[in-house]
Length: 603
Image (cartoon, rainbow, N blue to C red; front, side, top):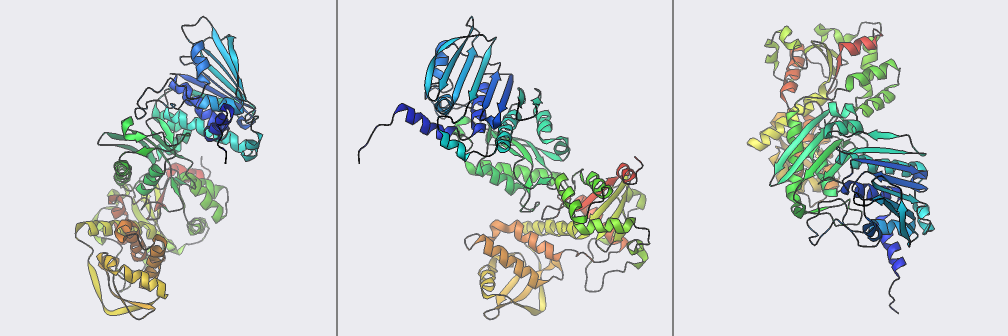
């Protein structure tokens, strides 16, 4: 086989395939160049999803003629000296403009303060046209048209115009969030205009993620061994169906790094459902020598010298902030409730409306509301008919909380319990409205937190069964459970084999009281099947504790005495994370008097 040297044109086109993946890639590279040039205003204009036209104009330092000529040559840059590890700019590879010029029609006009006028250079499909004078007051204007005209096969891999337009907007939004001191504008024939005024970080986050996010977020601030983390993270009950609203930055560079995404996920592990995603804007700052941004030409992935340090910092900071948020839940629940029921939504639609606002109540809750509002005497309000627990049941909380005078309880954050609806939802009056609590979800969180505390303190106390409970299971599930028997014993669940298709339960966690052992073992076996044989149970401690807590909490349909309902509310107020259950669903919804008045058309 004959070895041939590739032509310069072919080299440029191959390089362009890595750097210029789609129109959004072009916008990213050009906007980063403008930021590196010290711009304080950047205007982006597109047409045809960026395929027909991309124009980026800035008021940065500009370039003299000689620099302008060099800028379109491969591996020519003003941002990198000799130390590849000391990168303090967004761009540094010197490939972007040459790659864009190899596959599109490129025109660059720039004027440096030392020049009497500006200069313009053009590149079409890799062919460079000599610079000529241009009228320009300052800064740089880069115009890219007919993207991929030199490589038409690439056009077949692009998505529709709307998708490409959206991708461009996402790039600009992420760069705008990373640099709030710069004014950004995005316009064109394929979109409505957007303008982000220069300001501070919190204001820019509010512009991009909305005031609801800022109102339902917690501040993150942490530092460890020279690595600093700051930003805002949404409450566990303020979540989305995908990760598009996760904004992660390293030294001012937007990234989509797997380590950071995984750390963000781990920070919410025991407070959010697996199929939901937190909303966050997190900014990581560290010495450039501690991070390698030269992993890929797109520069969206990075590698840390000490990945364990970075991951531990993010996970620890998120968990501490969520813990300090206490029982706080999203403020959007009341408004979503009013909107859902005034619009006459069906239960399933109402639930989707909650989800979009950051909460996910069940359809039975909607039914409870309709039954309560109906012109009849709901049995849920007849407190005298709410019998105490049967002898086999245990109290849901410390009933001595009833000793607090009612006036004082109403002034508490979660108010004073007034009734139980459908043997599942607690209605509590507050000083300026009322709270509706899902008793199962709330108690699930309380039991879970107690299990974690007991395990960390001295291990979980067990209760021995007088007669072991025999549970029939598939042989493969039995094998998985027995393989983890020693580790399960640390959680207070003592098992032993009882033939090829059964296990005997000899001891259970005392904290859980009476449980459905068959359902619990089935769920644990499913978890073990998902994790695989190599994952140690201790690495999944929180999830195992959450599974046990779910099976050992007050069930829906159990009648509670008034003092037990109040005790549950007081424990919620004292327990971090009680605003959501172990699966990320809200444990309560609060409606202010203003919300109620809107519900009845008084406002």
